[in-house]
Structures are given as C-alpha cells and as structure tokens.
Image (cartoon, rainbow, N blue to C red; front, top):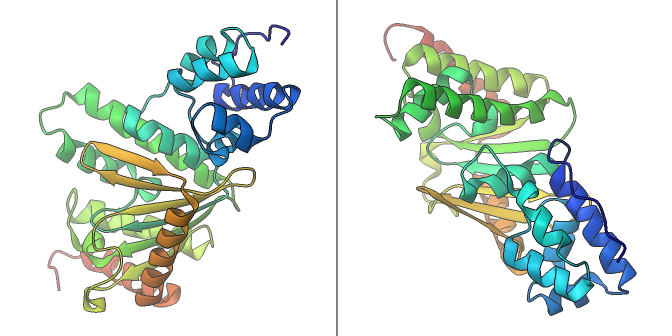
Length: 279
C-alpha cells in the first residue's frame, strides 16, 4: 500500500486510524470477518476499530501491518490513538462512549459520571483517593467533567439511566452537594435530555444486583457492554453476551419507577436535602 501519512494526534487519531484500516482492508479485498480471522479477533472487533469505537492495541497493529502489507504504519500510529487522560482500563470505554448513539446504564451506588456536578465529582474523587494532592484531585475532576460535554448536544446520544435508590440517598459530599446534583439530573430529565428511572429499595432482588452496567450502541459498529470494578473495567462485544445483558437492563427498567414518578422522587429528595433535617 502506498505509504499513508502519520496520524495527527491533535485531530481524532482513532477515527483516522479506523479510516486507514478500512481503506487497507478493502484494498486487500477482505471482509471484516476475513481480516478478523487472520489477526485472531472477530469481524465485529474489526468493525469497531474501523468505526473508532475500540482502541487498536500494539499486538493488533503489528498483525494488521503483516496481513495488509502496510509496512509499520499501524504499529507506528497506534500509539497516537492510544493517548488518553483516563486510566488505561477506562480509556477505551470513554472513547466508545463519545461515539455512541445510545447509552443505557444501571448505577447501583453513585451518580454516573455523565450526570455528575463538579462538587459531586470532587467528593467522589476525594473518596477514591483520600491522600491525593489538591492538584491530583483537580485533574481528576476536570477529566470527569470533560466527559459531560456529550450532553451539550440536545438530541444525542440517547442517555437512559436507572439509578438505584441507594445512589440517591448516599450523602456524597454533603447535603448541599446532593441537592445540587439531584436538581441537575431533574433539569436534564425535564428538558428531555436524559431518561432517568429510580430503582426503589422495595423493588427487592433484581437482575443487576452484581454491579453496574453500561450498554452502548453505535451507528456503524456493533454494540458494546462495559463492566466496571475497583480499578478495573472491561469492554465486551460478544453478540450473545450483549443480548443477554440488554435483557437484564430491560428487566431492571421494568422493576424501576416510571420516568415521571422517578422524576418526582428525585425532586422530592433534592428538596429534602435542602433542609437542615432529613425527613
């Protein structure tokens, strides 16, 4: 293949790398499934690389260069596509989140990052790193708030969040901080920017008791699910696994309060937090 230019890290390196991969694959006359088989990944994984929803790893880049005859292009440039302000385990999820057309999320114990306010984010980051310097916490908060720009677009991505009642009642950062973040969520819901449901305590046992879940859909790539634990995270694209977890999410939404009743509860709790005494 005629030598393509190095990617410009100031642009969107993953999107550019994906476009080059698609060009090289089509020039080689290979389908996504065929190329995936030669580099030991699924065809859907190749589609996600081309769409920029998955990050190319050095081992994949080396194999792609070998199979597609691109010299060391992908090997040289996958480093630029991998640069991120976020921890490695989380960076790919953030990158996928930015390309998603729909995000469905269950949050069991805290307000999700996309819905946080700076004060709430600061309380969470300080709890995660109680001995961190002020500069470290400032950077963590800034990085978290940078993600919320996704909500600046009035229509996309679709954001559908199921909040466990525990996340609303855990006083993170104090009562004033909780009042602010709940009013923020209510405002987004009132504007139709987010669908928010509350899973009340009296719903009892449910399908996602084992932890948080995020489902992401894309225009030009297969869907992904993201699991997160303490200092760890994993993206999964296996179609059967994604379909199963989509069902689990749908069952949780069926157990949760309807959006209007959820909004009423969120606003009532925000009002409660504004008072000196908890009811």
